[in-house]
Image: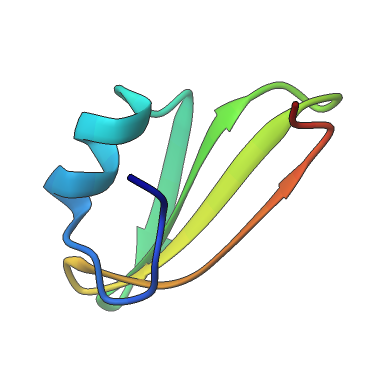
Length: 58
């Protein structure tokens, strides 16, 4: 399975595990897995994926 917009937060965490870091406010949040050299960043609107990006992934 791959990340896609509209996925629930629980689905993302079942794919990637618990995030390294999360922050957010007003129903928007951003979670990151990995470190500054290799990471995935996911932005949520409520409980759903709005967009995501990655760097240094295999």
